[in-house]
Length: 135
Image (cartoon, helix red, strand yellow):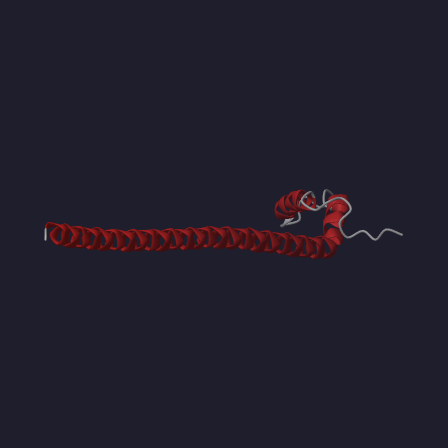
């Protein structure tokens, strides 16, 4: 009878320890699974942050590129318009510079003198070889 009680007690103890062991294994697996999920979520968030940073960099580079293109286009337009102005006004300015001093009494003499000086300053803005055709 004592043997039967000891066997029952050992069986109950073994069953209890086995169930505790399996519950602990199950909890450990759940903890590991949750940890893996958390690590995967963090990795995904880091990729998204990286993606946001890369997108911001791409947007900035696009802005710089567009600004550069616009600046080159603007410079080209200004140079074209300056060249047209110079080509159209140059004969009058040359005539004034050559013969304008004779007619000091001419009513617009001082205005033409200022225009002539401003014209010469404008011509300095263009490159020396701008509009020339090399043969």
